[in-house]
Length: 437
Image 1 (cartoon, rainbow, N blue to C red):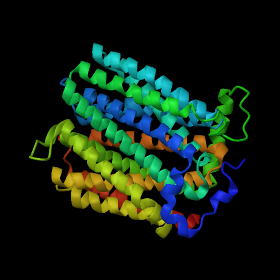
Image 2: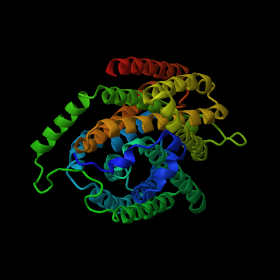
Image 3: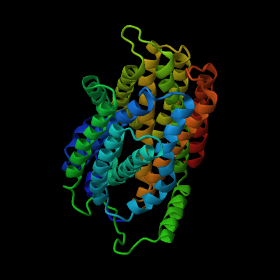
């Protein structure tokens, strides 16, 4: 495999670690890829807010657990069956071209979604179009993660991941906040949500323009034959080879399993929060219910995400990626019990902060582990499987919620189950990495 950065740049003295962020930002190629992500994920936040308004807070929405689970399943699960196969193509196609074309396709699709919202299209046709936007988005994000080692050296991957994925999540939260503010100005009817959806095309177009400035082969993949057509058999064999590649790397396999478990428990907490703000809480001074209250939750989560970016590089250097992830999941277990069980808005906001920190810090660590230990010509399909794992476990959480949660979202038993689940995940991951290393 061809080196993606000059070898002399990978060995940095310990004294320079305090300036890791500055060193990463000095790289023009990183800044360009970073901008590509920020513009796209800000648009994601705008588009997702328009969908949330239509699905959860429109007068026609029932807002019960089964409806929410069905919505998540329709938007996330179908891509999960094709995502790993699409990942094989990320290891064959020029990733620069993928980033450009994916954004342009999304511009067209969100315009179609806006028309459907404005004209009252619902049910299967609406979900099918929204699914296409989501599917292209997941493909795009996997491509970004696979491309990152081409713009920074290995010793800067933790910092680059901390900055990129965290800023991307914050950008999505800012986009969602901007959409809520826009909704206050233009109203919450079909025309308003349609205008919000259409506004996301600005971000996707900007992202495409930034990605186009990379050279065709600059983002990889390296040393692959691109001229021949890929048959279904080729893609299937590539997927099997990727699975074997991960199975041979026990640390990667353990990390992906652990973060999949985290995503399940985090998903249950998310569904509970949506239901609580939709059906249980009422406005109480500073604390707001419904969509405005969810905006406060997203803000608290975004603050946790920012904090994760600030502390994770130093924490990984001090404790190592494995011990840091174990500590994060243990923190999540305590958070669920201490701040989740009261079922008040005043405790859910700090819980959102801490769980946002846990989610982002663990993802930064696992992303880096995958980038370090997976070869470049397997990286696209591994990140696609990783992304699929995120989708499937979240949908599984939504399905569980549909069966066991009341319409209000308030369930003491389920909070305790989630807390115990986090604690067991931390313990199991600790055991697995001891055997793997």
